[in-house]
Amino acid sequence: MVLDSIEENGIEVIFSYFPAWEMFFSMHVLAGPDHHMGRQKWQQSVEEKNPGLTGEIRSLQDLTQGWTLLIDIPAWDTLRQMEIPELLSFLRKKNIYEWNEMILPFGKQMSIAERDRVLSTAGEYYRLVFEREEMVLRPYISRILREERQICIEKGVFGWCRRIHPRLIVREDDLTYLKNREYTFKKKDIRRIYASVSTFVTPHLWLYEEAQTLDVVKGIQVERSKGEIPDDLVQVFKALSNPNRLKLVKLLLKDVHTIQDLSRCLSVSEAGVFKHLKVLDDAGLVVKKRRGAYVEYHFQTERIDFIPYAFYEIMG
Image 1 (cartoon, one colour):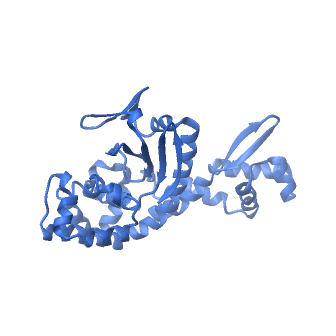
Image 2: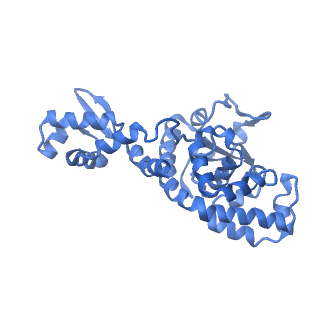
Image 3: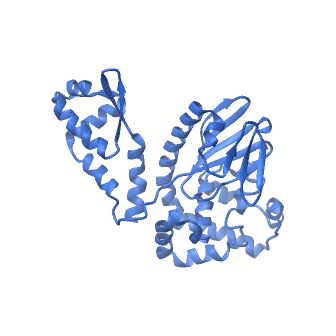
């Protein structure tokens, strides 16, 4: 799903959310959970509810290159924009010869039984686990991508790339991925960058390159490691539990305001508005910026966007 695109010095930067990418990488996390401590609670929850399915995913990790097979071959350039049901249907229609030709760059051929087992497991995982997961991930990732687009505009495409991962090195004329070896790409040769974010990729630095096109995937941390119910989430719900604060939020969602503006709009004293804004500020729901003699308040929409995902993660 393409959200937007910008162009800079002949490079098209396409900001996209790829649900199939996120699904297969979530299966990669389940296949090797010890390497993905940032998704430990999620992995344990899925395994407790679906032990047989999780075991099957792990048993197929060698055959599927840790479930990154389909997003690590040239065919991904054709598959990347498909929704998950569309992709699974497309793959099921391929006969074994077409399938093996598609995965040929992977360097291994599959039997009909192996191919069917892989597709059956992916389909069952989507139906039992990821379909619900994706419903809450999509709006959250879409919001983050819009923020990343703005940062990319402000810092430039390669300034943005510097923020992605400590092992993505941006130099004057090239950028280098430090993986099992160095993969270096000349800036002048890059024509397209697919910019995406993922809640599962950390700690990996993802690399996909095809025909002057690079995928750049930023990892997003979504899981807390301590506390059964995170204090910051409790604080957000408390901040939103007051009707006057909700009225403030409604105004701030529409525009940036000062305390004086909000006092006039709500017929509440400036001292009263200040107290409510202090609660919202402590919960991370607003940010203050000084403009001359006044302080402007901006609402942090990403905090609200994250609530459904955080709630789903915690309540399981």
